[in-house]
Length: 432
Image 1 (spheres, rainbow, N blue to C red):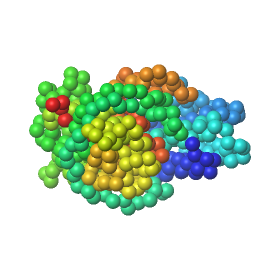
Image 2: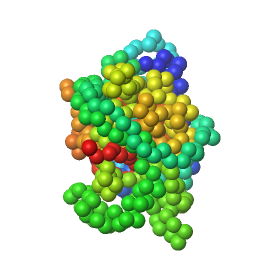
Image 3: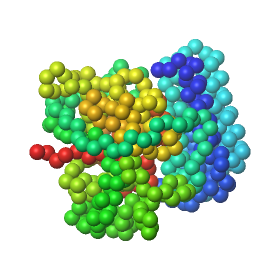
Image 4: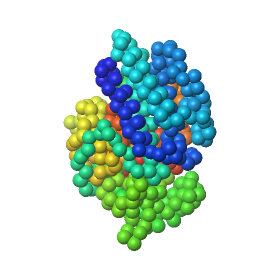
């Protein structure tokens, strides 16, 4: 766990990022249209402060609510999604004042008392919760075609070249320990705990599928061939009359994709992004490949070869080792304000030569989001438990994910039709 000084810095950074992400938006943009895949941003930014107040100040310290109406305005467990546009939300100025008030109270309480493990855990949990919502702010802005956000606190100028990174990494079979171990300083409930799974030998793509590769699927009528799609996938495609990824269009000059509020030519060696699990699965059928299982993905990211022909039992915390992410190893924290070539960041390779297993683009896996054996929910009951069996697992983080959130065991999850999130995929060879 971070010490008090580090934790206070994380809390302040997370709150500043929330402010930065909405600072340039007009009042009507802060509410936006009523869509099932987004929240009104004016509601969502208030929610992150409410969550911090609830768990740190009220549950952790038994203090009275900062606002008497806070639960009625921002309790996501009690307020149906479709009604969030109809709430008597305070003005943006009042909302920002509430965020500052909660932040300052939390920082003051942490700074003026001896460290209490439970309070530190709650404070860090709420900062990570805010980090996840900050990522959601960015894909909401992409969904609605807003200008790219201006991140004041983020360094710029990372390496963006690298081209393609073709080929497969061969990973031997054996008994693999999937999930987090108890010596991790902080994990979420769905990562608990490591348990053995048997893996057959497999070959996994050294990089995520690129825009050039996915364009081949589109141009080969991949969206018009039902034999490439699952029954549910074809029903989803047909309901939308989808012919290509959601932010693509074809012009006389070729394919373009929408990047926030501007159209750019397709970037052949960058990963395809904003594709659903259904689209990823259909591409795999077309390419004669398959999606990796969650265990295969984590093994390729975390294991090291042993002295023989198998893999060692020791797992790395990150693909490159145990040192935390830095700018030379992964495209994270919004530094590049988008994806980079799949061949970039060789310093972040896993032991098997897989590149960018953390950062750049979230990666769909084949698996349903399920609890690990012996699952017990943490204090926030709605974090994982309600979403089991209806969602698919994604791994690895994306260009805007905060680096402090991630490790090889971190699990993300969305329903298979979602393509608004920063998601792509890598593939595995079919079994020989």
